[in-house]
Length: 111
Length: 113
Picture 1 (tube, each protein chain N blue to C red):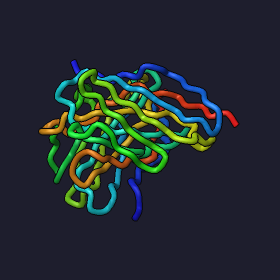
Picture 2 (cartoon, rainbow over the protein chains, first blue to last red; picture 1 turned 60 degrees about the vertical axis):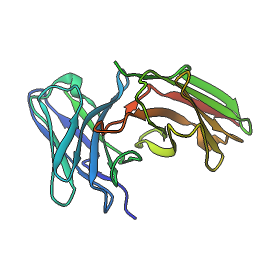
Picture 3 (cartoon, chains in turn orange, green; picture 1 turned 120 degrees about the horizontal axis):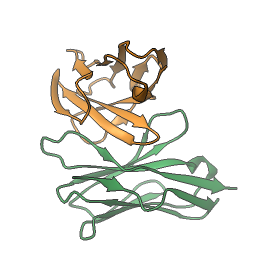
């Protein structure tokens, strides 16, 4: 069974640009969550989607957005990038809720 | 607000010893707890989980203990191996319409050969 696939693995962007990250969940998993991981703040919840609906959102500015497609694949977008957005962005999927399986993440560097 | 914290940021053990990693949580509504292991360059990997209606759960070489009275969670690793060296995170969820995990800061476990 294929795991959670995140693309790209690495990204370098300039301040002010926008970025889109992609996540393909495990087949059959309908819940997809996104987390931001930084050395200072640890793992922080961004949002969770189930059947194309956002069910919960973390305390991040509106520059952070996401969506889920009918095949459960998900994307997150960050607009007007700031240096502080540099982080490892992790996607996780679950059959419903609870035992999330994480991908390897996308390492975003904003310069 | 809710938070999940770890008592020790680092833990160093000898190969073959048992390891205990502790975690405190503050949300009384938490009903699901999970431990993850994260190796350098990888995403968190599921180790074991436990629901609030249990106080102990065992897996392969790992045991999770839950003390709801003092809001404390621990992960015990038996016969620790060098491959167990990683950062360990506890996380909690309050279920219902929460749909999110709140993570602790992590404990770095180093296993010395």
